[in-house]
Length: 142
Image (cartoon, rainbow, N blue to C red; front, side):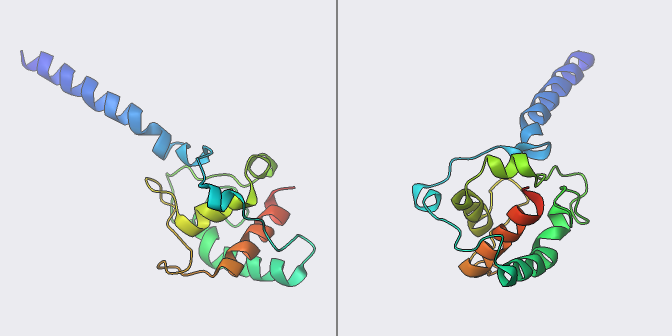
């Protein structure tokens, strides 16, 4: 009887872990439904705006690289064991500026990605968020 109970517990724990796998093993890579008010947003900064890219690089190095890696490869120093998005051409080709802005501004519940927008604990201005996105697209999205 005790071996049957052990077996049932093992199966139940396995099912729970399988259900949670997308969150811890790449779930952050999936494209999520962005609210319409964000979808319409466009980045006012481009890859040719050197001062915007410099500011974006500075913020990325201070606020983002710890988790996303200094090369955007998802290998950050504080989140070992978590699957982070890899910032590359494929990632940026599937995501509009408004989508990325939404993620940075609001964060992603159920993942380590916290909100960085105005009024959050990290309190980046909208302008700084756009500069980070311009930098990321220029550095990692080509």
